[in-house]
Amino acid sequence: MAIAEPTLTLGLEEEYFLVECATGALAAEPPAELLAECEKRLDGRASPEFLRAQIEVQTRVCRTIAEARADLAFARKTVAEVAARYGLAPIAASTHPFARWEAQRPTPRERYASLGHDLQAVGRRLVICGLHVHAGVEDEELRVDLMNQVTYFLPHLLALSTSSPFWRGEETGLQSYRLSVFNEIPRTGPPDHFESWGEYRRQLNRLVEAGLISDASKLWWDLRPSAWFPTLEMRITDVTTRLDDAIAIAALYQGLLSMLWRLRRDNQRWRIYPHLLVKENRWRAQRYGLDEGLVDFGKGEIVPYGHLLEEIITLVRPDAQRLGSVAETEQARAILARGTSAHGQRRVFKAALDGGASRDAALKAVVDWLIAETVAGL
Image (cartoon, rainbow, N blue to C red):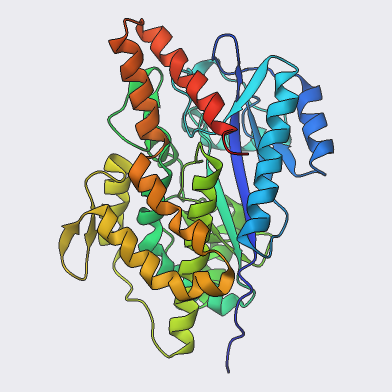
């Protein structure tokens, strides 16, 4: 029986840190009024996160990438305006340049208390933020099939997003240290391969029935069928400091799913590689980002990231044209030319040190840059 074409509607979620403008430090206890006003002005599309110093925003279900950009721009602008009245600002970065996890306080909600009890020390270290992109894939069998295939491209998307080169005031040498922190908790990494939706549900139910997890939302894979919506949720990426970078990544993800659907319609499919190989590219994206290339497993060699990006843009061009996202997809070239937030943070840090600033002052300069970049181009 033929499977209907997915709508590929989009829903984006971004997590931000709230920082004190004067010091650059995380706002360990932002006023409750701040979140309440954001929730009101965003019609409920703002919510607390695991830590009090975080806030999450969501778009509506968007039919086009242009709608998603408008929603996300409004959300960023709203959080920034509300936070400013309290001497605070949001930063879209996946780690804070110098925050100590020991000083952070969890949000007092039952769900987060349960997570804290379960995860213990690894949970207390989760001072990280991410970008999640939902794409509407209504048919359950297709959702699993596309999950199996698009996993190959997740490292390519991660490399475009990196924004976490610092941890506890130290340069980590990684472009995405967030992933190292997140990897400490269970049920992370690339999703398992499943032959069908039924197999996926059987394995999930074994975990639930054994009392190990309560539902599918406790599967924290890089990519997963959403527990609540008929979507395939991409979760591997750092939150991008610039809005247009998030939109470029969402457009690429949507285009890749459309391309894979098109192949299926024409009785073709993308080759599925073992996780052993995909994880190597995942590590290279985490460590080097755009700088040292990823492995093309068809060729069996490391290829410069720019070449791989051009191949992806070519692959999804018919889909981008149909979806009205050509400009947003090609915006990925600007990320490659400019560098990601991780590159920008390091540049600011080095320039401050070279200019005679102390290490603490240089880290504060990074936060100031993140504050400005988070609302740039809105």
